[in-house]
Image (cartoon, rainbow, N blue to C red; front, top):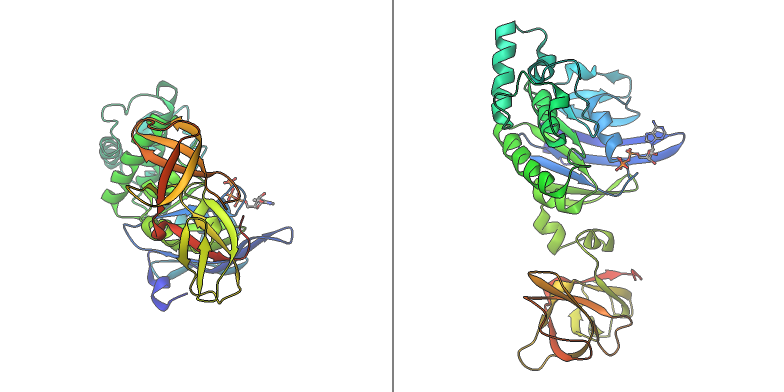
Amino acid sequence: MPEDATARRLAFDDVSHSFDGRIVVDHVSIGIAAGEILCLLGPSGCGKTTCLRLAAGLESIQSGRILIDGQVVAMPGREMKPEARGVGLVFQDYALFPHLSIRDNIAFGLRRHAATTRRRRADELLDLVGLSGRGDDFPHMMSGGEQQRVALARALAPEPQVLLLDEPFSGLDIALRDRLCTDTLAVLRDVGAAALMVTHDPDEALRMGDRIAVMRQGRIMQSGSAATLYQAPATPFVARLFGELNTIALTVAADGCVDTPLGRLKAAPFAPGTAVSVLVRPEALIEAADGGITAEVAEVRALGPVTALRVRVPGWPATLGLRLPGPPRHGRGDRIALRLAPEQAFVFAGDAT
Ligand SMILES: Nc1ncnc2c1ncn2[C@@H]1O[C@H](COP(=O)(O)OP(=O)(O)OP(=O)(O)O)[C@@H](O)[C@H]1O
C-alpha cells in the first residue's frame, strides 16, 4: 500500500483472513481519511462483514495490520481490545436495549461520565439525528427507521474516530431508506469520523460513498469515486454493478480497433487478434437525428420519466437494451436510428458475455 495510506484515520494494510482454510479476505489494503465515507460494495459472502469485524476487533487478525491514526490496533499477536479502539459500530441488527429509555440507550457508552454530561450529550445526539424530545420514549415506541437513527446516535455518543456501518439501511422500505441515507450522510459529515460502510446495494454505495471499494471473493477489485467506477470500470464485474450491459464477443482488427455492429471502437491497449468483449451501457445508445444505425424495436416499457426499449441490430447476437427520455414514442416493429456514445462502451480482454 502507498506509504501515506497507513497514516489515514483507518487503514487496512494487506489484511487476509481465512475460515476453516478458506480465504474470505484476500490481501485487502484500504485507507479512509477523517471525514471520509468509504463504501465497501460487493455481493453476499464476499468478505465485507469480516473486514468490519476485523477493524472492530470482534475477529482476531491472522495476517496484515489494521491502523487507526497511524497506530497499529491489530496485527497477529498484538491486538488492542475492541473498546480501546475508538470505533463506533452500527450493525444490521441494531438491537437497542428494550428496557432502557432512548436517552439511556444513547448514553450507554458514556457510563464513566457524570449523569448531567450523559444526559446533555444524549440530548445533543437526539437533536443531531432528528429525534429531539424522544429521549424518554422506549425502543418499542419507535419505528424501524427511528430505532436505526437511535442506533446511529448510540454509536456516535463516545465520539468515535472511526465508524463502522454494516448494511445499516437494509430491511427498511425505500422511502425511509432514502431519507435515512440523506440524514446519516449529513450526520457523518458533521462529526468528521472516518466511516466504513458495508453494502451490497450499488445505489446505496453511489449515494453514500465518497469512495467505493468494490469487493469480490475477498479481494478489492477496484476503488475510486463513484464517477471513476462508472466511467472507467476496470473489469466487466465492476461495469455491471451499475446495471446490465449489452455485451458482444469480438476480435481486435489489424488497425487496433474493434468493429462492432454499432460502429468502430478503439481497442487499446489490446493487440490485433486479441479476443475481447465489448460492453455497451444502455445509456450509450442514443436516438440519432439523421444517419446512424438502423434498429428494430422488439419491446417497449414505459418507466415514467424514461422508456426502456429492446431493439434488434443486425449482427448483434441478442436484443439490445436502451433507454430514451420521456414517454413511449415507438411501438414494436418500428425502425429507429441509433448512434453510439463511445465513452459508455468498454472493451475488456476475453469473453465476458
Ligand atoms: N465465523 C465464521 N466461520 C466460518 N465461516 C464464516 C464465518 N464468518 C463468515 N464466514 C464465511 O466467510 C465468508 C464471508 O462472510 P462475510 O460475512 O464477511 O461476507 P459479506 O460480504 O459480509 O456477506 P453478507 O453481505 O451476506 O453479509 C462467507 O462465505 C461466510 O459464510
